[in-house]
View 1 (tube, one colour):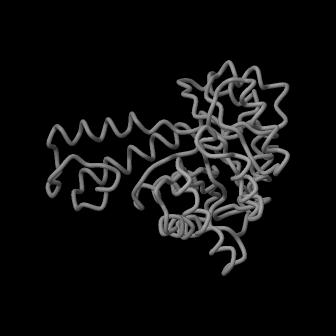
View 2 (cartoon, rainbow, N blue to C red):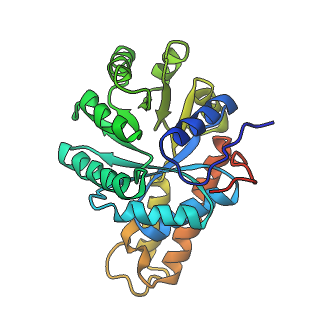
Length: 279
């Protein structure tokens, strides 16, 4: 019997820990996508919900919280189990998303985001951890793939909060941390096969990024061929999804669904959200 998540919508606070505990115990990885455009994000959420998989959404540049608010509505609409993380690389960007989180907490009693992904080679992780701990949001630490660096940064942050994960991409480092890491690991490592993904997951990785670049290349190649793209005056990007070009829309949707669901099955995260769950 698989352990299953019993929450729907965008998870926050202890709900995030419960889901990552479930992934750790159940030996699966939560698929994470980073993309732009409301329609494509909706497609990603719907793709995961249809096969009972949780999904992580990473967004950048959302300094007013509008995209995050829309994702919350989409998660509720599709009754999906979603982890929503901001990605920030500067102090100003982090201050903006933190302000949005604080405002949401003040008026609605919960943060807007599940957590925040920061590069600890740029931002002070201890300072950031002190701020996120006040809202009980999860911190995903991105930086070095050195075992000693990872253990050191985790030790410093754990003195402030236990609501954090460390992103590690080097498979040898992940293997080295397997026995000694007193924290959860996320990864953007590329795994070509189910066996490669299984090896990484068995080392305690609880979430893995879905590689979207091949899908983007496929769509751009389609654009270059000039097939069915009436209405587009420049090469499509994720943000031009709303343009009225049916061939582009259909290709984008089908490509996103195929990419996400193939990785869901590779990461063994399908059917991990309990069918009896309620928001």
